[in-house]
Each structure stands twice: as C-alpha cells, then as structure tokens.
Image 1 (tube, rainbow, N blue to C red):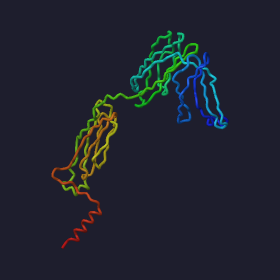
Image 2 (cartoon, rainbow, N blue to C red):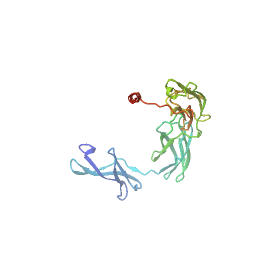
Image 3 (cartoon, rainbow, N blue to C red):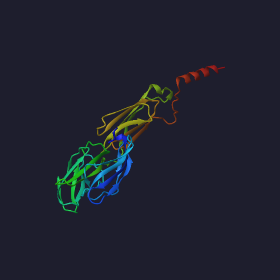
Image 4 (spheres, helix red, strand yellow):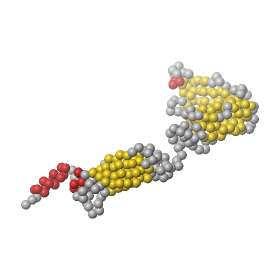
Amino acid sequence: MGRRGPSSMTAEQVSLAKVSGPESFSNGVLTQMDNGEILVTVEAVPKGEFVVVVKGTDKVSNSQFQRQSNTQMSLSKVKIQAVVDSSVEPGQTFKLPFSVMTQSSGGKYSISARNDRKFPMIFPNELTLVTGQYANATLTITPPASTQSGTDVTLTIDAQSSNGVDANYAVLRLSVVTKITDFIQPLCKVVSVQDNKCPRDLSQCGHFQWGLSANITDGNGTGIESISFHQGNGTLTYTSLSAPIIVANYNASCCSQTVEIIAVDKVGNVGKCYQSIARSGVPPALTLPLPLWICLLVSAFLVRP
C-alpha cells in the first residue's frame, strides 16, 4: 500500500506465479471497474500451488512496486455441475439436480447450500465421491406462496473434502414466476338501466340523472383486480372485489349518455360492458360555456330589426 493509501498506487500487471518447479507466470488482463476495483481475467491457471503477484507504480514516490499474496492457492480439483432450466413457482417445491466430482482422492465430501432469500431448502449433507466420477444429488427449494412474481434468488452450493484441503462452489440464479393459467376475460353484464327520468329534450338533461347496475364475475379465474369506467362522466360504486359476483352501480347526468365499464382480473385479462341511453333521431345536447351562451344571446338581441 502506498504512503497515501491505495489511491496513490496504480496496478499495471497482475499475474499468477507458480510456487514450485520452473518459474512460470500467467499474466492477466486488467479491467477497471466503476467502484475503483480491478477485474483481472486469466486465461490459464498454473497447475499446483500459486500466488498472486501485483506490479505497478507508486505515484507519490514515482517508483515501481511489487506485491505478492501471503496465501498460496491452487486450482480446485472439485467440480460442481448444476443447471437451472425453468422458473420457480411461488408455493411450489422446485427440484434442482446437481453433480459433484473430484480429481483428487475420493471419500466423503460435505455439502452445504444457501440462498439470499432464506427460502427453505433440503439437500444431502454429504456425498461419497469416487475419483473421476460424478455423484448425483438433488436440492429442493420452496418459495413461500406469498413470494412476488419476478423475484430473483441467488443460490450457492458448496462442496468440501473431509480434510478441508479441497473445496469448490457453484452459484446459480433462479427466478420466481407465477404460472399463468387464466386466459379467460371477466364477464360484465348490464342487468338493469334506469333512464326513464331523462327528458327527450336534451337541452334539459342537466337536471336529471340516469343509472345502471351490472354484474361482474371472473368465474373460475384468478379474481377481479380492478373495476373502472371510460366514456362516461358519472360515479361508479361496486361491492367487494372478493365476492363471486360483484355488483357495480353507475350514475350520471342524462347529458352523459354512454359508459363503458372495464373489469381487469389479477393476470391482466380485460372484460367490458357498454351501455348507451342515446335515443335514435334525437340530436345530442349542445353544451357550451356560459360566457359563449351570453355572447349568443346578446348577438341575437342586437340583430333584431
């Protein structure tokens, strides 16, 4: 470390150096990360034990430096194979097959697993390995039924020899997704319309109200998530969304003669019902701002002979 901390030093070369035998270096490719860390990619790892060697420049003293890791490392002889080929459903147990193999001496290897969501898991605590042969096992994980669809889970499986000399791990990513089986739109049916008070002379419509009642149901679907209306200028009320049949009531001025009620279920299917009280042959009410009405009346008065 430089006299002013890590910021005073620039790493220029990172390599893996073989500890025993002929001197051998595996140079890495350095990539500066956004958080100030350095990602080093090495194409080949030395066989046997090795150390990490870092070379660079101390910007304060303008001198070269070299650092070497105190810990000797080696490429793990343990391999773990596991593939996630489907998503996980909330409340359902997901089975994940995995295999462990060692090129070192066989024997008992301890198995552990963890996930960042703390979902309950079941897996074998140990496997007996034969050198060069994969031992198969299965891990199960069960997200709670309340898990939100789209949740990502990071799962880590560890394997370690009984003497602790060799170990390895595999990191997997799972997605919790609710399976959609409801493709039928909600049913919305108008059962009654109360428009008998609306006058035929639509210039008088502002003093009167009309209304309707509709039954809304999702049958054996996922249930109604929301109810709203378009093409209307009234008020909409409805009974509990959890009821098998939801009764919706709409009321509006007789000047607002159409309405479209929209019901959406919990997976996005949309059901609609439309109602109009417009009478054929009757022109729609002319609605103008009050100042414009005054201007028209004044104009009519001024043009009289």
